[in-house]
Length: 348
Image (cartoon, rainbow, N blue to C red):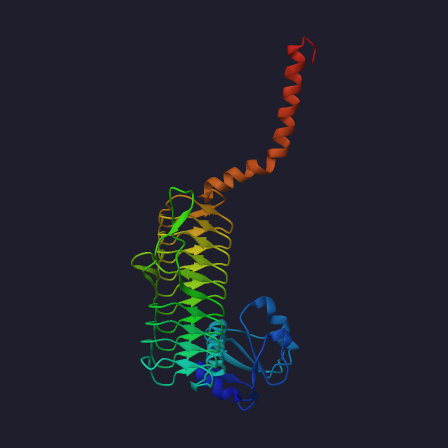
């Protein structure tokens, strides 16, 4: 799609400085821009690129004052970074804007589809599924019986959604995510084997949630595994049965949360974190990458290490961790001197 600088300024409530009719057909980084590109400048660190960029237009803050003449048209806005982000969202929506049902897909007769739904080739939509308006299901997606998906949600190729899952509006599920598979429930029997415990619950994903590629969310043994409003999950995360993730919590890749743990609101959890089951993690908790959490964590705290400890204690301990080789060398020297003293030698 192609727009003029003045049209883009209208979308962003900005002002044009330069040619208002210059044509824009792509969005790029300022250091890689070509003719027809629109870029942005928000970080002063990149200001020098403005004076030799080949971009046709650049979004800048209203307060920005160039040090010398610039070639591209400037679009002045209150917040250049946020404005460019909004354009990226619009571009992403338009690029993925599809409607209709492609050949070789299967849709059960009892499924109910809203307006402007898209279902890609080789996708399966089971019995009594409810798809709200503008749901987009890309090719090779499985949607099990009784699943409900809210409006404007996007399901990318290869996603598997098991029966009775509930997904809210404006969610995004990236390729190969698996939602609603069996929880890891087994009980040892008298023969040193394990009997499977039926997992009869479901998964509830509320509104504005994003789930990364390869992430798995297990259905509950009883009740629901719940991913609350605004949660953002990176790729390759494991959420076990009956976990409850609080709203607007973000979790980085390769983290695993064991069964029945409850995580509060607005938490930030780094990559490769392990959290054992049946814990309560408070609101606004921060957990550093590769931490191992084995106990409840209170609100508004930061944790490092494995087993995880409070940030202040971890930093103090780390001072000693770094000195361990020197401490060991000193201890070995003292041990040698004590041994010589015990043997009656003069060690002065």
